[in-house]
Length: 400
Image 1 (cartoon, helix red, strand yellow):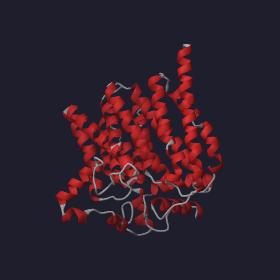
Image 2 (cartoon, rainbow, N blue to C red):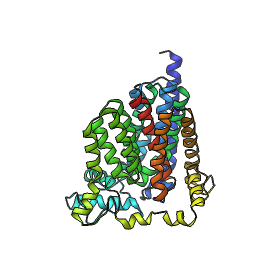
Image 3 (cartoon, rainbow, N blue to C red):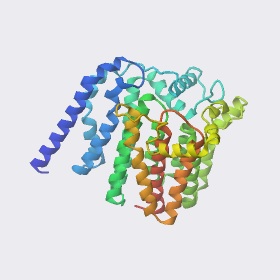
Image 4 (tube, rainbow, N blue to C red):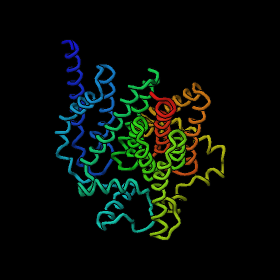
């Protein structure tokens, strides 16, 4: 290691650390506002994109291995954490949104020492069970738990990036995937701070690539089943994925584990509360239905739905650089579309069909159901489809 290399590396680390420190220093006072997410949380919001960018940069430009890149990325935020220290144990508050429902359900599990809700599930139970562990340890959701969620997500994302770096994926495609993952961290970070379930779904998706690569298929079936408990709209794509894995590995246990897990909400709702609801109550399912819009003008609805996957639907975003939703949408959605279109055109027939079904099954559910927090459903479908396609193409069909 030459002196010039050491000097350049040290200079980069110093500049990155200073940048992070300055941003936190000038924005952290806003954390006196205890609501979970908003402009006041910028000092936490940019940590996941920052860590991800530093990790990718170090591993590519300085040829650092996975653990070195993770360690150095972690060191760059330590001075900032000293500033945030006085806010870390502040309890966070929620508006009347899904995040509050998750929080109340988790506290019910803890206070009543039970795994059953007071009534049939009104939200997907998977995230509430995760929060039960968090609140059981820290008593409430606090700024520290948000930071720990950011770190957990970063660790699992970095594992995925490291696997991609070591794979035989073409260099240009690797860089495209790095961009897709990095740009998605802005949405994922928002999701973590808002305390809803997608971020944990993505994190487990990142982890699934390692499980496929290591052939830990029983654990994978549990993970895929639990992801459905986090996001009901994944029921079709996860079922397709687990059946495809079964086709290649021929282990009946993975089918048994997966379907046993996704049946748990139905058993809870029907056996405990005598309500015929597969995941959540039909009243809430109907609330998120798009059938009325589809029936009234199917062509217009379909066209607007398609535009929403490009980030240019006027029904979904305000075209303003001051609108965070527009920024997150425009830096992610068009590029995912380009990646999938290019990949589809360059793939053989088998992979074309697999990619088609991944996109169709993920977006098909949210064509009929799902609303709010754009681009929540679009990015969820894109990210999960990307992860599963990487799994199938590079670690299931062909070994790399």
